[in-house]
Length: 346
Image 1 (cartoon, helix red, strand yellow):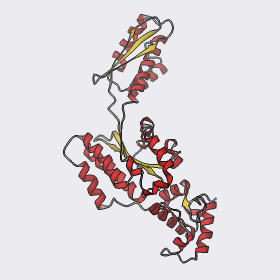
Image 2 (cartoon, helix red, strand yellow):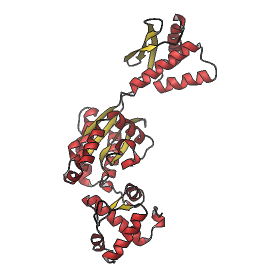
Image 3 (spheres, one colour):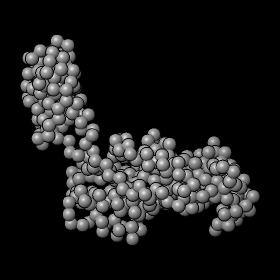
Image 4 (cartoon, helix red, strand yellow):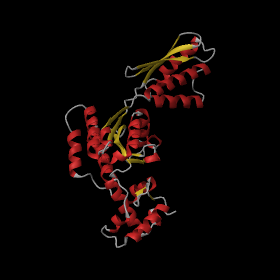
C-alpha cells in the first residue's frame, strides 16, 4: 500500500494535504466538493472522490459513520506531520504572549507554571510541564534490625533527605552484614547519585572488587532499589487547562473527552510518557495510539525538553489534546517555550 510521500502521485499528495488541513481546521469530515473547490485543484468532485477512495484504501484516510466525507487516520496524520507539514517560527503574537508570562521577575517555579498556562491558552489544549526534582547524592545507607527477618532501611541523601522503609532481610543475615553495608556505602558509594551508585555497585560486583558477602550485597541492592522507587515519585507534573478540551467540537465526542480527562489523572503514567520526550534534543510528537496512555481517547502529545546551563535535562514542557491539533502552529509554540525556559535556566 502506498503510505509514503514518494509513492504517492502529485495529485494524490495535493488532495491528501488539502483533506488533512481542512480537517485540522474544522474537525469535520471533508467532502470531495470542498476539495474540488480549493485553489489549484482542477478536478471534478467525482475525480476527487476517486482519489480519496484510493487514499482510504492505503490507510491514510477513513470515512466515519455514513458521512460522504473523509478524515485522516492516525497513520495519515503521522505522514502529514513528518513529511508534509510546513513548520515555521511561532507567530509574533504567540511569542509575545509566551515571553510575557515567562520573562517575569520571580521564582523559576512560577515561570514554569506560567509557561504551562501560556501553552494551554494559546493551543486550546491542556498544557503540561514535568519538573524532575533533583536526585540527591547518596550519603548513607543503613539497616536497623527489627527482628530476625525484618529491618528498617534508612537512606540518607546528601541534601539531608531521609527515606526509610521496612524490608524483609535475606535468610540468616548477620549483624556484621548490616555493618558491612554502612561501611561499604561510606567508602565506595557516598556522594554518588542513585544511578551512579547502582552502576558502580554492578561494576564492582562484575570485576570482583565489591568487598561484600552475598547477604550484604543483597542488602545494598535492595536499599538502592528502595531509593529508586522513592525517587521515581519525585517528578512534579503540572497540568493546566483541562477545560479547553471541552470545546464545541468535543460535544459530539464526549466519551473521548471523558476518557482523556480520566487519563490525565494518571500523573505517574504521564510522567513516564514525558520521560520519553526527554530523550534526545528534538521535540517529540505522539499521535493517538502511538502512546499506550492515550490510546483509548485518541489524543496527541507534543512535548520538548528544556535544559540548564550545563545542558543537563531540567524538565519537559508540552500540550495534550485531540489528534485534531493545529500541529503547524502548536509544534513551534512548544519548541519556542522549551527554548525560552532553557534560556531562563542559564
